Picture 1 (cartoon, rainbow, N blue to C red):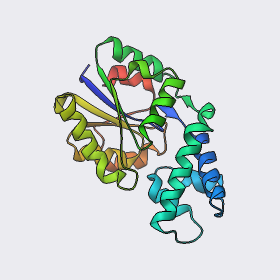
Picture 2 (picture 1 turned 135 degrees about the horizontal axis):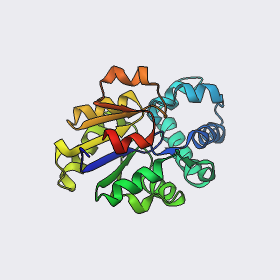
Picture 3 (picture 1 turned 180 degrees about the vertical axis):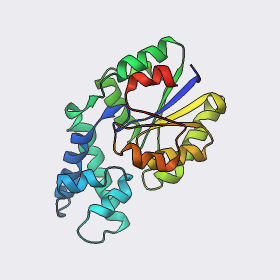
Picture 4 (picture 1 turned 180 degrees about the horizontal axis):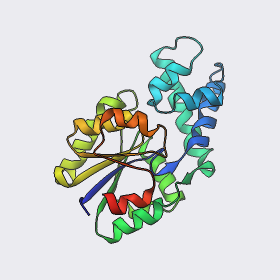
Length: 215
């Protein structure tokens, strides 16, 4: 295998939280007496970070404060009300178990609150494979994902050339490329292979089993 350390995105890469995201988004808008977006609209903007997502979904311009309130409501609902709707992608636990047994370090970087991420990983039985999890500031997620990856490398003394980031959106891949690690795009998440290839990932996989052969 080519790498010693594997940094995974959370939503759309390890865990399918699509239904959780749709319901939590609609609930957040409803609780703040805003026009509730349709499922189709929510899925169309799913690849955006939450801040830009909610800006795009709003029927009128929202203030910074309103968007932050939306994010708070969303996080509460996502963390407490919708966890039962989540599921791991087929083959993920087997792939993580294999990497773990090979003494590889496995990390998760998420735009969710870290306690929420941990709750989902615990619920699905994946946390036993994870070395560490980190969160990214939601408003500046695209900018700070690069910095978060770099901080993770420093914190755990990882070798850049032996570290790969795995994500499901073009922005994920772009940010990880800026951190100078190898990148792997997965095609079962928010964006298609065609969209992902625009950011020139070093690898692209269509099934979690490919982690074991390609990476």
